[in-house]
Length: 434
Image (cartoon, rainbow, N blue to C red):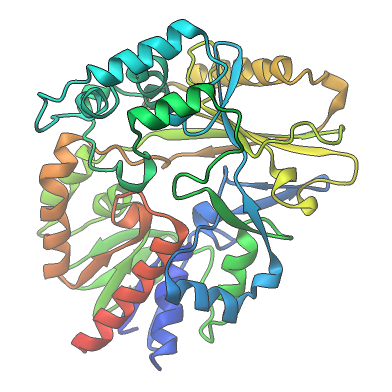
């Protein structure tokens, strides 16, 4: 028996373990179902190329997190990068964010965006969904030419079903002055948004710094340990290998829907019903190693238009030289789906690969390697059910001394910084209550 059991060896679980130990507490066990740690902050190496599980960049604005990175990893291990990201639409590259960088687009599009912004739906006092929120804040032109098609691609469901509570730091505001200036000026990009500058490890991909944190742990992480059953009343976790671990406190960082389905005992029916209503999309992350240097000088590109199956393509070799062998480039792309068949996914993947090669003029014989990474839990869908019921689910868990944290444990959007701080906060909360 361990006083504290942690499920999931991703960043949230490792952070919780690290901060328990930093406070002198070692009576815990951390279980990870896979052979390797890292979760969605995973990195794979293939044929000399390094590929992350989609684009993961480190953003730092918290003093504690900044000091932790300095102490545990060292800033000399990172490249400090000023973002070079673009939107590709109407055969034109425009700087990100779209709402302040219209220069180069057809005059009809610029006019529609400005006119829509001026006439935007200010009478919508309390937008009921993301679609209304965009109309209120940006107008019909921006909605039609960027926000609606792009977000439809990512969420893979109707924008009427999604609230705007997630927007926060992710969607920069604009003004009429900024829109007009961005339509006519050729000035260098003004840093806008939370990801205008970021850090990236010089070697080892994004997993490098997560491993550095895990190396600080005195307790060994138990890998190849897949949890299959949880009884929150009797307080035990059962694993696929037959092992049973009892606990006093449980920290869950695996996807909340998966965790709720595992429940046994008196609360099983109630929580399994909640699991059925928690929605997230899935993402197919395709990666190409290309035998050509400097395939692009951009960090990533957004694609709102329907003719491109993917919503984003990025270039890892521009994050760190170690991502690709000398004379080569590293490329990643993503497309999302919700409850699609395997046949649909395979067909869309082939279309995405063909479109990528055509767009970037990549010949088949230039491809050194290809790595496809399916991500079953990708973007949490902030639908109306989530808004009404997620706090109730967490309350039921807390009553049973279960804390569900991190991106998927808490069922939210969060950066790596926020995920690490989730682990810190829950460790301190548990120790304070002891």
